[in-house]
Amino acid sequence: MNTLAYIPLAGAILVMAAGLIVRRYRRYLTVASLFLVGYVIGYRWIHSGHPPMLGTFEKTIMAAFTLLVTSLVVDRKGVFSVHILGMAIFILLYGLFFDTQIRPLVISEQSLLVYFHVLFAWMGYGIYTLCFLGALHVLWSKRYRDEEIVRWTLERGLLYGVVAQSVSFFIGSYYSSRLHGSWWVWDAVEYLFLISWLLYGVALHGRVLLRWDDRKVAGWIIAAFVATIVLYWGLVYIPWATYHVFDMDIKMHMPFRW
Amino acid sequence: MVKNIIDYLGSKRLTLTILKTGPIVPAILTILWILDLRPPTFYMVWAPLMAWGIAFLVNLVASLFVQHYVHRANLLFHVSFVIVATGIVVSLLYRFEGEAIVVEDGLFMGEEAEYVRHNAGRFFNTLAPRDVGFHVERIEPVFWQNRLYFTGLKATIRYPPATGSTTAGIELNGGPTIGGARLRLTGYGIFPEVVLEEGGRVVLKDLLMVGVFPPGNEDHIMLKNYRMYMRLYPDYHMDERGKPSTRSMYIRGPALFVRVEWLYNTIYSGVLRQGESVGFMDMKLTFTGARRFVMVGIVKDPGEWLVFTGFLIAGASLLLRLKGRSRKG
Image (cartoon, rainbow over all chains, first blue to last red; front, side):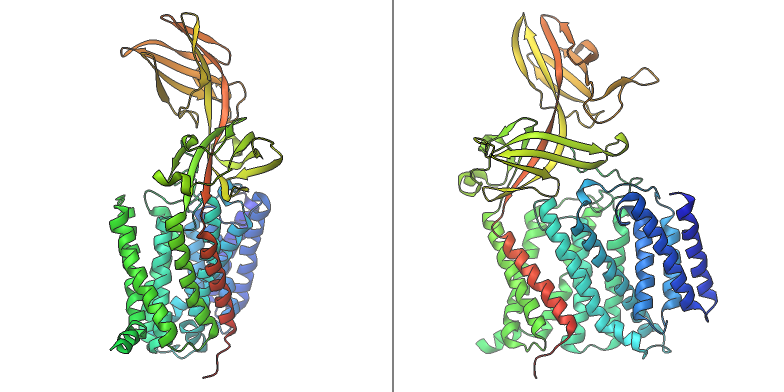
């Protein structure tokens, strides 16, 4: 990646860091950092011919972008904004430990279906992150417990997250039937998806069916988010890596082995 | 008594208990995966999942009658699981999956012997798709920066083999449906083509099905009493250290490194360019060229459309649910 993309990325990190300090202009700084991260996404998209989704570095850009968008759209009062900015900075810095080279898409991922699968997966991730923050506030902060956004994360947000994750799975599963010949492949990514999905399912059903209190739902949301973190970020560390890992420096992606 | 049982089977508490126990099996499987332990599939994967899945479905079906769904979309979403489950059962009973190796300009007629592997066992004639023959006209791989990084792979086929009236392309993520079976590419490689003569008589003139792709891979075959090790360089050149190498992954002036052993003694070791021969004992080996091949996955799954119908309904109902209209009461 050349300096034309590094400078906006560094700029985004600095603007977000400023947003952590300057409370008054935090929302404007969030918008500014969103544009800078958006520029990096656009730059890579134009030069690689595909949206950033190949390898951990590109995932971190998309994750930061998703977090900023979700925060701006859903959390209008900016209750979670400081946490979101902190998380986005951490994610972007973490991404720099991975290969930043711009690569064309491998043939296994060349499909619009993959783009939509990824889009819904990131939508789910953004919403789940807000749910996680809401759950933390319920468990450990009295100040914001009754904020509208915290209530939203425990009910509506949880539902939106499950919907986005489910749609991502349905699209991925259909694409898997074309790529692997089977709509379900026994692989670590599927195991982790099931764990995460079912844990959110428990939180959602507990709330709807048994009217669980906030603290109980929050506990399950946190457990589910841990599984989600492993699902989104942990696969690259799992030895005997799965077909969902596209990092060149970790594992050469070789779909064809004789 | 029966009503109590049905009430329990469809109860909300049982729903939550089943959901809570759901992550246990995948969690165990993830840990086993990390430890690189591949469990016996039936006992560790299918048996516990079936037990959980049956409990889930029983609770689900009972809850359709016992519980009151506030949102129609919720009801539809849960019904979709029953459709998916039906699809899974149909797939388990009738799914056919096979894989065949077909070289460029080669034919596939769908005979059992032509499959490298298939899952039908002795039910091949019942489950395998009929009339799935085709002719592979052309195979076109595209590599990024001449590395083993595929940015394109397409096999152009003509079918049916008798007339070749229809042309289609098969790629890694899809291809035409022939005889009710979906085709897709599952692999790519290159086979060397050799002629072996013994005392002036041709004893072998064929492609050698050896694993010499990607370049650097070494494989061997037994011919007569000779063990022949080989490596293929599709775009041969000598590197700066004077060692045989390949410039790219494409076939442009291929060469075959051959090491011949007889009674564990190396009697020949060297590189043959296309058209070159080597003699050892009373044998003569000629490297005549290299040909691309593809592995074609052939799947016929009558349960699949049920599963996807279920997914479609589930997806649509979830989106409807977001609109949040409730049924009266």
